[in-house]
Amino acid sequence: MTANTRASDLTDRSEKISDAALLELSRRKPERFGEIYDRYVGEIHAYLGRRLDRQAADDLTAEVFLAAFRKREAFDPQRGEVRPWLYGFATNLISSHRRTETRRLAALQRSAAVRDGTEHGHEERVVTRVDAVSAQARLAAELRALPDRDRDVLLLSALGDLSHEEVAQALDIPYGTVGSRLWRARKKLRAALGGVNPLAGGSHG
Image (cartoon, rainbow, N blue to C red; front, side, top):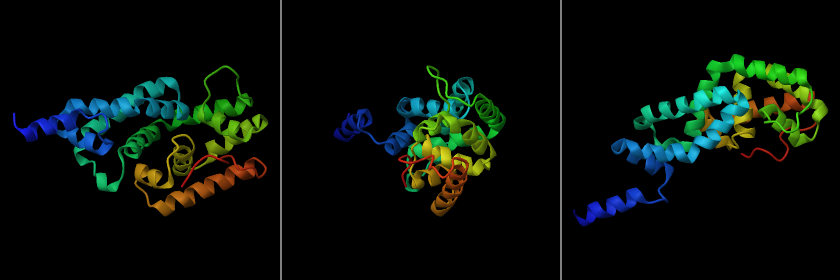
């Protein structure tokens, strides 16, 4: 074994290896993709669960990482980071389950009150931020009425805690489009909540 080979092996085993470098490495050593999975499976599953439900999240999380594994050769680190790339797969899969999300929003709209001691969905988390339980039904209705593309931008920002740039990478849209869609969605929600900003202290750009 040469010195260069030993150095390469040490680099491969480094716990500090970046996401992009790890994804590149997985092209030669597919088993290393498992480390990408370990790093992000929790937050991707949580995001899907808040948008849809636990059963859908269980199913779709596996699909997100399977799609990413199959397309890892096409990942271009010059275009962005691995994390928003994964959220892009998640959002694409959500688009094929819009009925599930719509049913969830409709059920929340009917419930009208946050349930203590239970797992909260994404709408309830946004309502909690403004401390306005009575507004939950109105907020759910407005989220349900948002165009899919505006809702995706809003919830990637609010739930995924993605920056404007990361949302742009996830959805493969211009940075300016993120800002305009987010502004439009926030404006509608503020109007529904009597002028209160539902994302106060939340997203960043």
